[in-house]
Length: 280
Image (cartoon, rainbow, N blue to C red; front, side, top):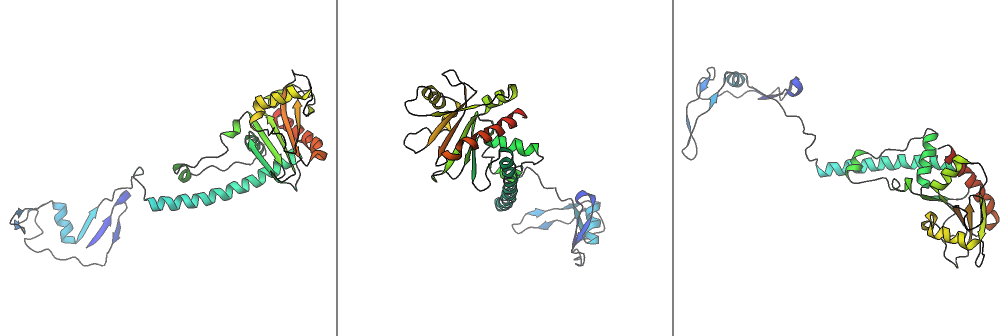
């Protein structure tokens, strides 16, 4: 017997070489009920055949319409796991290439050293994505297979955070520089004036530095600025130009073992940030 698949109205024969088995019993050329047969338990079974069924039996061919797969049906968990694994590998490769290119753009734009590792936190991730998009580099989309498995962009929530941090050097290596910035404050100032910012060293017992240090600890920058004493670190407040208690703190600079270059490096980084925010 052969089977004709008429899915999408396109017949496709399977087992075409098989020979039909002659029907036993009454003449199959006539339609109507077949003679009753006695079942195993003594019950009587009667089968009525339509004219199409009779012709199909005589020709040895049965046709049926195969139902299309329901897209809402539950997928085989093994197949879904393999799909997710392949999608993850492909996404990770694309994400790694994106980060390599985007970080290269960030280094060039902010004049960051090529021989030092860079790390980002908070709103710096959103800044990186905007810089990449501005230069025609698209961030890879998370595949549907990964979204179905609950995978999310780990930096999506931080992108619109109020504060961000850009670090130069390996943390806890004894030589590092961290610049924490107020995203909204720096954006607002960058779009209204080109006046230079001011870096003020914060030292214990300094009348000038105490209110600024308090503003850092209790403000937007406090969550990302390490102000713990005894770390061998130097700390600066970056203001809108003022130095008194009414000065607005827009960033903080923390240096460990990099005081000789911290001022110039931080000034260049902040100048680059201002340019990015001004053009945002």
